Length: 98
Image (tube, rainbow, N blue to C red; front, side):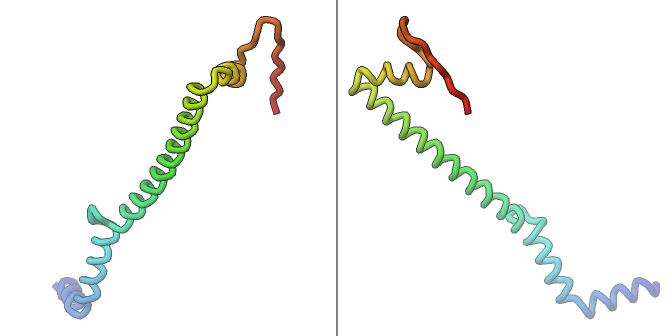
């Protein structure tokens, strides 16, 4: 009974401190909208925005190449030579790796 009385006296004296610490624990770590999850979600949003930017640049480059292919018939030959290493029958291709 003596220990229970000691605990009760401690809780009664420090009730505001215990309440504030419980609130910080709930808001900071336990709650569904906790500060830790908020930081994690913010990092995920940042990563996804960077990925969106990368895909937009890739889309713009592909669109530019498509427009170039529609306008210039020699562009098909250029792309076939550069990307797919195609050649004319009487040519030799040399590939240099760094």
